Length: 250
Image 1 (cartoon, rainbow, N blue to C red):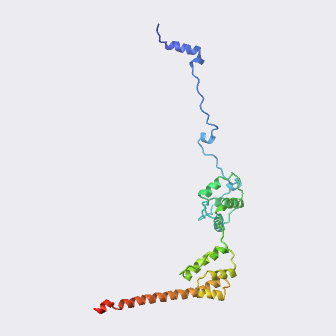
Image 2 (cartoon, helix red, strand yellow):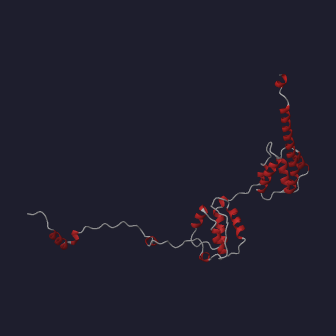
Image 3 (cartoon, one colour):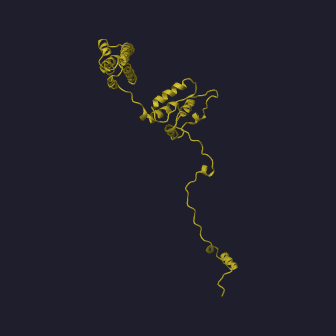
């Protein structure tokens, strides 16, 4: 008996028993809920922390806001905000427009922070700046106190001009310094000399008075240095003119 089965017989058997002739198909693995925008290959709608009223606002065509400060999330947020206000004070824009302009100053970490804010939550510039200052408050520079000024002592061999410049810069970092206290600090911090004696005899009444009086002693000090330098050079030239002992003996 022929062991081979004809194709016609196989086909006839499949017609009589279709459920036995077909192997069950395994279901495809579920991929969860599909993103409709991904399936359609289109960009999702824009998501913004700004309210619809702010998003609808546009800058006047004749207004060009440029040279704005940039904030990357690492500096003092209050300093950045102050610089921003200094720039936009020249423009007469709506609050919604100012919100959009302020947003353009963000980069890197600051931009990432802004983009993760809940959609539609920012409705005013005041609200945006409050969120901004609060989030980056750890970067805020802490003002120095009067105690810092007591550490600004004149170094050994430090010129009075150099010291006064260093001391004045330190004073600018300390808000609201009492002039009487300032006179006491400068007297304590100065090295021994005529200027220190002058301050002790008559304390300066203001910072301007202190600087004017210091200029007199700076001029004297630099004049003395110049005279000393000339004297050394003159002495060196005289020594060069004198014949050496060996030459005299020969």
